[in-house]
Amino acid sequence: MNSVRNLTAPAGAIDLAAAEAAIAELLAALGQDAESDRLRATPGRAATALLELVVSPGEPVVKPMPTEGYRGLVLVRDIPFQSLCEHHLLPFRGRAHVGFLPGDSLIGLSTIARAVEHVAHGLQLQERITQQVHDWVQQAGAPRGAGVVIEAEHLCMSFRGVGTPDTHLVTSVFSGELAADVAARSAFFGTGGGPNDPPVMNGQGGLHA
Image 1 (tube, helix red, strand yellow):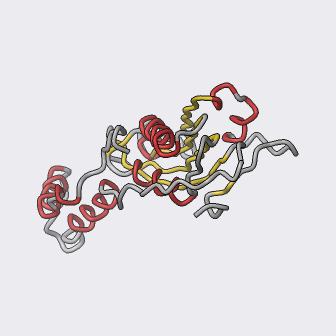
Image 2: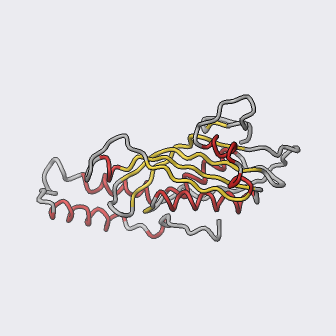
Image 3: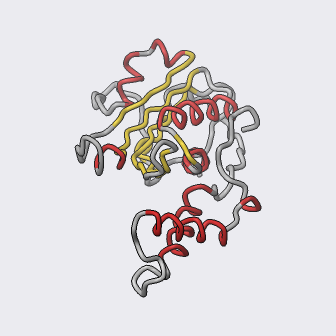
């Protein structure tokens, strides 16, 4: 994913002690007693939790597989992810639907899921994640067309501001032959279901490892 901007924090760049100290100062700035029995362990817990969101477990290694002559849509739906909004430092989470029309090779189901997880780490925006996952698919498999749809709930909207829980933001990117294929695109949004609809692989399992 060399040309895809990597926003995850390198593990070596993390100063956990400094993060804990900063969170303790933040608590004090918010009128809280960071040295009290109930909050003394909070900076450490909070720093560790944030670390899990900004440091990726690693970019997946792509091992292209033969198509066996298959030319139809490969769609992995409902890949769960979570990220940290760069605007408010509040989490957002949702599901990604990632698909492509194969060129000369296929990309493994687990590899696609790991790519979504990798891109989602760091301080992110949903729109950027959507574009980056799409670009990763293009680079990893050189497909005839690629598409990504992401649906997510943002706590910066659910828990603050307008305060509307269960409201989801939907973003999408389509390219190549998928950009003009209305029937194939409908599968990304869950509007398919007919006998001639393209096959779908759910994020819980699939044909390709």
